[in-house]
Length: 207
Image 1: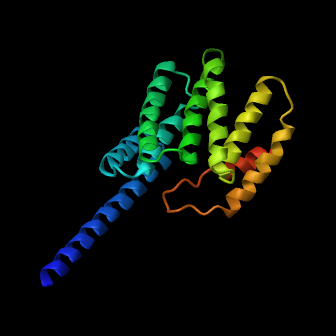
Image 2: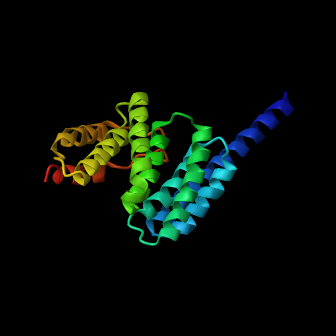
């Protein structure tokens, strides 16, 4: 009996230590990202992902760091390198957590970064994929604020590109803000971004 208790205590201590390392690692990665150290943040999320093989979050953030850095990038070689890295980690996240609306949004963001860089080259092939990804994400969770807002933002961008009125999508942006207000992430590291951008978008909506 004493041996069993000792083993149990050892396992609890090991799990607690691993959780502490994960928490500290993720916090450090977010700190690096906040300081604009994209490469360092990406590499740390990658290392955590390698250690946490059943956890989709580190791979998700490794993808997101590289995707966000690609918006506004003018150097095609650098952009493609970042987005290929992002795709690599989205694929890892998808393998761990299939049909996850958060990951579907991240995949759509990768495609959007390509389209934003060169709509003439990428728009025809990737735009239908973005639309399909948002439709799939909505079918899984119609009340996920990032799904609702990101789809509305994409629809507004498409409307602007074709010279159409963006006002019809303002209600969805407004609805997303209500969803953001009531949204409770599963943990401190689960996706919880987007509300500030949604509020900014709503201020300029229809203008």
